[in-house]
Amino acid sequence: MPPQAHALIVAGPTASGKSALALAIAQRIGGTIINADSMQVYRELRVLTARPSSEDEVLVPHALYGVRPAAEASNAAWWRSAALQAMDAARATGCVPILTGGTGMYFAALTQGLANVPDPGAEARTEARHLLAELGPEALHAGLTKVDPATAARIVPNDSQRVARAWEVWRGTGMGLAAWQNRTLPPAPWRFFAVRLDPPREALRQAIATRFAAMLRSGAVEEVRALLALNIDPALPAMRAHGVPELSGYLRGTLSLEAAGRRTELVTGQYTKRQATWFRHHDLAGAEASEIITSRFTDISQLSERFLERTFAFIQSRD
Image (cartoon, rainbow, N blue to C red; front, side, top):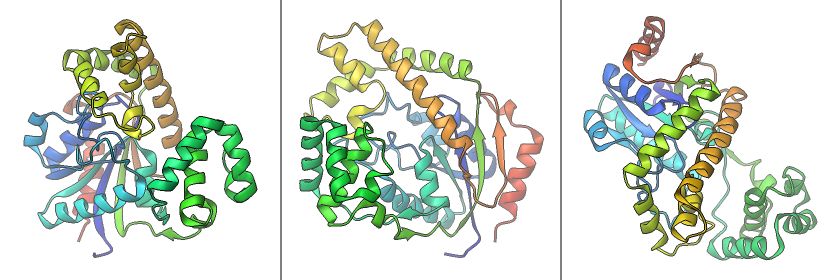
């Protein structure tokens, strides 16, 4: 890999218009869009994760959408490896890799490096989930403090996902997560130019409500029904995708469809706030300057000439 390979990043919170912006750029410069969203990798969740339409996929090449079954958990290490392969493949065909999504840790795995933590194995994962369900996160965190105090000190006791992850790593590898994090993979040998969407929260709230209504019309309930029929572990990431727990409640008769919609819009809105905060406090593109678009992207007319000039200048500087 030559050290000056170039790629673009289009990042921002859910419903900010990332996919539309990535598509517009890809059509202008000849790009391949590579998914950087942790939920859009699951093949069973096309509707609820708002994956690109089949029409959009015809317009420009897309990669890493719907490539994993919901029964298999994705993670940043897997995504980094798959993304690097997709980036190499795009470059080999003369296309510019355009990484787009809302999962900040995925971008960081490329631009800043990643802890090289081995797979702890199914047995350790099962144990961690059972202990979490039986004891609760605080009690499991207390147990973690005894065996891996360095990692426990970095985790809030009620953060169930991180507590369970730390426990499974310790049980499955014999070494704590904090110790593994000292053995990192380096940043990817690419130059990145980042575009970050940061629209007002009210615009996001409206977009989330509009999008969820469209999801219902497009078969979101049927998608969740089919997912539940697989009888997979409810602790898997795909089962926690926005809309899945809420529409599961509707299908089981514990929530009305209206209440499920309100809850989905609420948790999605809360998530976009966390996403926006993460992106504001992390340097996505390393040494390269980033462009920030402070409105929700909806069409090509929103691309300023200054933005296009900077993008083309970055692409034209590649070897």
